[in-house]
Image (tube, rainbow, N blue to C red; front, side):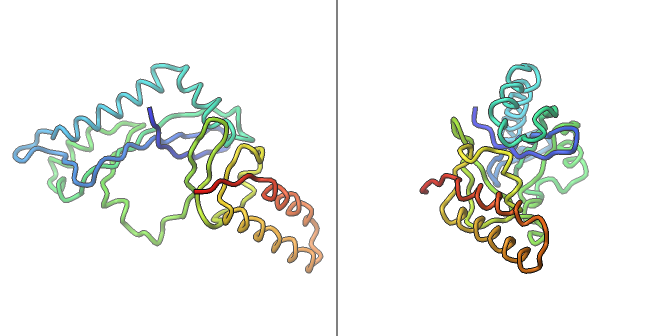
Length: 209
């Protein structure tokens, strides 16, 4: 089973949000009436399979928590992980009527939400850029060409738990070298921390893609 997910956290728990992405032209309803189209039924069944796999078989969620995302849960490794689900499906124009909106909304639960492709395109200037990571057997491949966030968020992971592109490695190092330079210039205590962070990225391994 191939899982697409993102993680969010609070100080006491983690939310692992699993995403099922269908085609933009997938249909919610049949041509006439308000009966669900097989496209939508099949997508709902896939969500139910995920939910059963993760919630009805606790060992699968435990494996996911203690193996798949183990490295990126640090330093909050002991906090519980709660699975949630999002279905990206179809276009909004198909569910304009009140009845159809209610029928689709009625499929949602506390841990499951449905969004259309139109929702993804709203206010793109307000969307934050994110890293894309792919879990390999022993490490994560982190995609991207520039340092979007404070690189220290990864430093609870050992350098050999990550693989990054050379251009991203250089950007992280440049970011922390600049901070060290600014702090030394202004005689601000704490530059030693950025030295450690810079050294972390110097030790990180790269992949070619």
